Length: 227
Image (cartoon, rainbow, N blue to C red):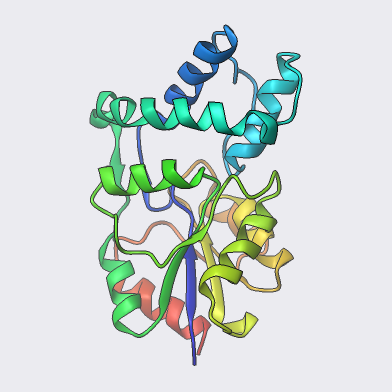
């Protein structure tokens, strides 16, 4: 039996102290001359493509996010490492990592990513916080405006024929849970972001955790979901 766990990054695996939004804002200003271009745009649980699309529309800039993707990501990726270091004092790896990932892998599961981050940004964040090299690929934020498409891409890339009942998406927002449900797989919530246990439970999560500090117990619960 192939068991697959797909993790979100921001506020699930780690918190960068807002480094991503700082670097995105700086890249947007450099490219389009608009300071604070993402003001009023929802970040939590959204794909980076969705976030960029929202900013372009709000600022009246012609073209879709896909049209602007190359120049924007080039500048964003260049700025992100320095932004992470400047925000380091507020950043952290979330409780229970990397131990939870290692326990799932040792149990024979495939562990990948289903994240709203643009792909290189996601890996820059993981590497900066010592979590690089733990994941078997995944789905990323340049795939679509819709997070469910990101989960679908992650499944295509890493599930290796696993049955839907053996695939679990883990994230900190209701968007992670609804994206999992939209693909017929299980969603697990962790309340290490802005959304509470109750909010995540009400979104239809199969299981909800305050955090993964007790990573051994969490691993047992997650593995039982796919038993």
